[in-house]
Length: 582
Ligand code: ARG
Image (cartoon, rainbow, N blue to C red; front, side):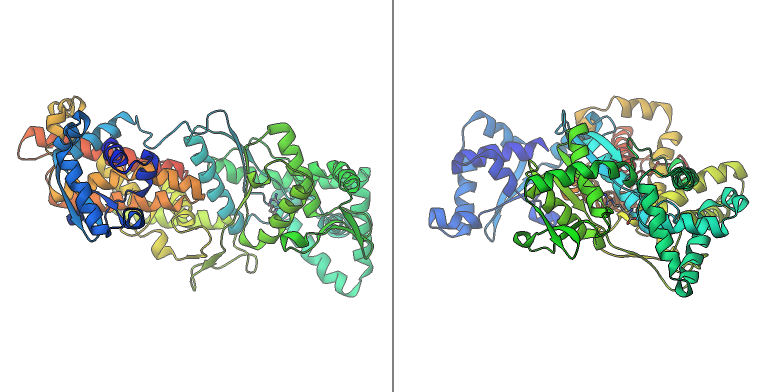
């Protein structure tokens, strides 16, 4: 809100401080009876050799006696200033607060809190990164939905975002798959259900290798030939890759996610030689039991393995090569990896190695970690042991949503129900991945995920449809008045509930900023949930379309539009598209 800045300007003059420092110290009080903006005076006690309480009182006197025209004008917008326990509390005039929050919302053009902070800067966000020939499980789902939200957040702030999918398409397991395929592969099964067939032969390989360990040697040899570009191995590997990608792309299509760069680990393999040369040139490569490592004691980390004793490359070396490639090709300002907590050490090592190699601003490489996905008892029965496949989770969510929508709307066309259930069911899963701090584990329970009155996407989506349907039902004259709302009319939104709701709406832009800085979309999810809760209380207690008079009705309708606009903006950042009805 602009007025917050105006208050800061005045305070900064009295205190001879920078306005931005004062702004940083301003707080928004937890309860309305404590005012709308609070300035804590504790940190000033030392400087002025006075108690915070006295400082607050002095500042209040300064304010009220100030004859500077800006302050005089500011004071017309302030109802009163109070001091309490070392705080200076400003009570903004309710009509003014309503006008200024609503104007800001209307002017945001459906993108509240957007900014151009990132103009001219490039951010790589790497996420999803599933492994070829393996099921796309819920852990990759976490990365996929969290990563997409983070990419959206950067875009919202004007950054150029490059969405990367670092496919796990290389490594010794492909040697095993090649051997297994030649022994037991079934071409029809591969075409019908690629990941199932590849999983089947991979599991079988391990079973059989228990009694025939020579299979392991064959697998190593096969991977060696693959790394050398052997024809037969490359063809098979390519085929496994193609069929797996077909499955993954089906999921990405379904959830509306598109990547700009899908170079897998295999792409980086040929680039490792140059990294090894560079490491040797800089004397960073040390031999250890036949393998080659980089020591990282000064980072308090274990040595990073670069080349195995048989000369083959590993996961970490491909990541190191990838950082240099990204830097060369994209000249990024930030390079973000949305990958689970268990890989923290891996990324610490990779970032430390490139730092030792002289990578400019190494802090631009960031690992954004997240927790694990668990299921409440009985919430899910799996088709493949303990791995839960994302598609199964989405299908179940959509089916359960469909049943609810069908019950609630007995006359709706089945095809329409299908469309709505798909959006809400998928949205409900996405929201569940984003609603809590990302490093916390998620415990899935359908009662929570699909609780239409709880902390869920359906509740938020339902709130948006409520706002939309108000507009649909409003008479023409009211709509017109809302479209041309005056400051005087906006100033009618002065009830406790309206003011509470307005303040929740006004906190949205800041939540966007904090979410981006902390790579925590949950901050936005919590804020739109607070808006929804506050709106629904207001909605139950106040007449909107049948308000005491048309002016108030129009103002309330505009308030409802602001709610719809703000919650929708938050949902879209989360990758959840609002529905018109449900
Ligand atoms: N494919 C890996 C896995 O499923 C994740 C890759 C993470 N990204 C990276 N650049 N290492 O565990």
